[in-house]
Image 1 (cartoon, one colour):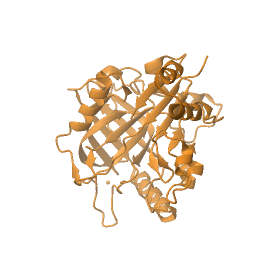
Image 2: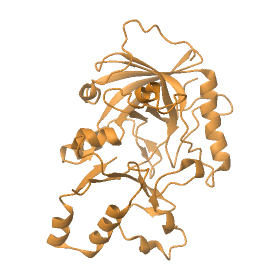
Image 3: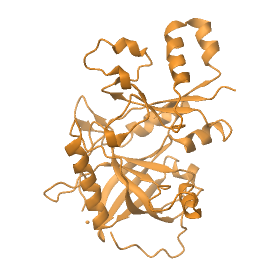
Image 4: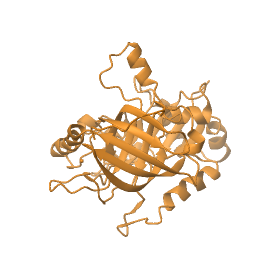
Length: 327
């Protein structure tokens, strides 16, 4: 049986500004559950407003900022695009069921625009963030602790993205309605496109014991193996999932790669691969699953046939194995 090819097309425009500031102190957990595998539908139901608090020590917060600065200093484009996660505690309060999950991975995210959440003058700025519930820190591979951590979920999700409202590159404005991105994702989902579920949340970050309210964020389901399992089932989630960008290797246009061979601004040699952020490598077609033995034959064949075939030939060959995923 041919494997499912999930092509992930990314609309990736970020950045934000605002206020916040300095948590070692955790709230009393009381009867709060440690983590929840349930609550997925409630978490991503429009009309529900959730509350998320990130509690992070001053040391880890300083480390997050340092990670960004060091990465930017050594990056060709001087952007702080580190992928390193810092330890934090995730607290959820809302209709999906209150939860406290200790030692999650927490970092900023973004590409073309990723602000430092605190500048050298001590001022705080809003940014996009990512939470990784199954992030392994000190657990040794092969141990029970490692396996338990790698399988940890919240609301059936390995990760969550917290995104500020959409930035309009043309006008330089933010969507103050907080609705356009929610509406766009929902419109695609209603049209039958397998795209991320979304909702809205209030975000508070407690740093060194001091709470700072960051405002309303769009909560976005991450496109990963859990995403594929929900859409296709556990017996059809083993295909190649690509995160598609517009990078120095060219746009994810599904056009033959040799189109760019004479373009001095595009390095077509690295257009498809597995991201290595430590070495500043971000391919246009970034394989997110099956990365241990990456094989890009299915995608390359698809791109070739998309260019070479037409009409019924194109539809009958690819319709059974291609599913579109947009994020």
